[in-house]
Length: 247
Ligand SMILES: CC(C)(COP(=O)(O)OP(=O)(O)OC[C@H]1O[C@@H](n2cnc3c(N)ncnc32)[C@H](O)[C@@H]1OP(=O)(O)O)[C@@H](O)C(=O)NCCC(=O)NCCS
Image (tube, rainbow, N blue to C red; front, top):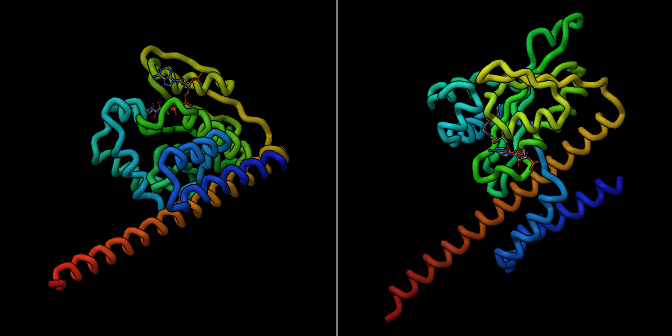
């Protein structure tokens, strides 16, 4: 509970900073990065985020598309992947920046076996983080978030298909305890998941609450700045008009 309160405290200060018009950029960044170190809000995405997911994936440079999809995915192929995402069956997670741009996305795809209670229940994990946001732990945090969600959904095996030279992805998987099997240039990582517990359920509830609060604050901050920009534009037009009329 203390941890939750401290997270909310940091979020509250970051939100106040976002809404404070006189704050200098350096102060703003300090507030935001302080909050970001304390907690990374990861939001479960839904149908209405499909376009944002597509934009995120299209932003990936060719080498990252290759790492993410296992082939040199062209725009049309990425579009068809994004159109095919099944938000009802699978789970998609995202991390938004303060302009509500998706800087990281993870897809937990449930295999058909998951519907059959006698078969092994599996889910495949895929992830991408925009280059400028890398090495800040976002990939690891998305993996951990997906791991808890899959556990609560009684998935027994999470697997990741990656190129063998994808050191970052394989490091994330190994660190979580996955068994990595290398087959030449490609590798599969398997992570056995435990039964859900009170801890995994509460942890997911808290993460969802934090992500919802963070998202709502970012939406409000964005709306606030848009209104402010409109007001300033109206004022500028009025001043221009006055200058023209004045002798
Ligand atoms: C893989 C990927 C998601 C990792 O995202 P990230 O946010 O940078 O991950 P993290 O910050 O949690 O880093 C994980 C670890 O890998 C390390 N790492 C990051 N980039 C690395 C690189 N190029 N080579 C070696 N290690 C690297 C980090 O230092 C970190 O280790 P540490 O915690 O001991 O410092 C990101 O590189 C990416 O989007 N790649 C393109 C798509 C892709 O490969 N997807 C995976 C296949 S589905």
